[in-house]
Length: 302
Ligand code: G3H
Ligand code: ZN
Image (cartoon, rainbow, N blue to C red; front, side, top):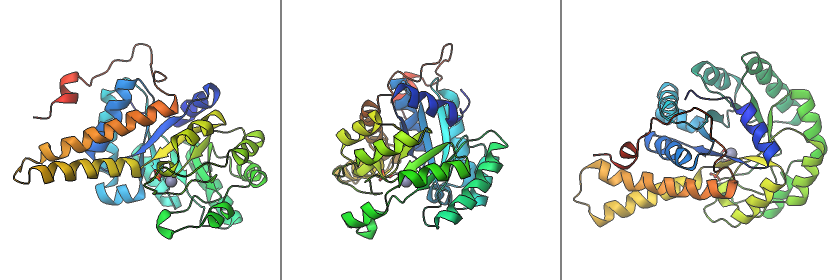
C-alpha cells in the first residue's frame, strides 16, 4: 500500500500504549529486511532515512526504494526524515514524498530551536505532514559522555510544554538517559522524568539512541508514554557481523548475494526482536489490504 502519514499512527500507538519501531535504513537490503519483517509480524513500521543515508544513497533512490517496498506490503509504512538539521533538508524530503519529518535543533539555543522548528512545522503542516523535534539532547557515544553530561542534557518538562506550544510540533524526542550509537544495551531510562514529562505533555513521545538501552527499560518507557522507538546501531552491527562472518567462512565466494543475504536475515531477526518489545505485533492489520510480498520473494534471492 502507499506510504502512510505518521500522525494518525503515532496517536493510535499513544492511545493503545504500544510503540512503533523506527528503524534506520541505508540501502535496499535494510529496507527489505525491515518491511518484510513488519509484514510477517503484521506491525506498522517507520523507515527512517538520515541525512547520512541521503548522502550515501541519494534522496531520490532512498525514497524510491522505500516507496516500492511499501507498495508490496499490506501493513502501514511511514517514511521519516531522521535528524534533519536544516530547513531546506526538510523541504526537499517533503517534496520527495516523505510522510513524516524531523527537525533536530538540539544543538541550538532554546530560542533558536523554537524559531527554526516553528518555521518547519508551518511549512510542513501546510502539506499535512507531521514534524518531530528534539528538546534536550540525546548525546553521541563517540563523545565519551559521562553520566553527568547525559543528565545535564535531559529534557526539562516545563520547557517541553513551552516548546510544544510555541512550535506546534506533532511529536517530541525526549532526552531521558539514552545515548546514540551505543553497542551494549546497558543504559537505563530516567522513568520518573518520563512520567513528569508525560503528565504535562500530550503529544507522542519519541526515544532516540535506543540501541544502547536495556530492553526492559524500553518496555517500561513504552508503558509510560513512549510511542516511537528509534533503532539504528543494533541493526548495523547485526548486518556487518553476519556479512563478515559469512565472508570469513568462505572468502572464495564471489556471488555478492550469498554474502549479503545473511546480513539481511540478521537485520530481520533484530527487527523481529524489537517489534516484540514494542508491543506492535498485529497492530498493523488493515482490513482489505493485501500483501504483494510472496514467501518465495522473501526467501529466495537466486
Ligand atoms: O535517530 C536514530 C536513533 O536515535 C538511533 O540511535 O543508533 O543508538 O539506535 P541508535
Ligand atoms: Zn537519533
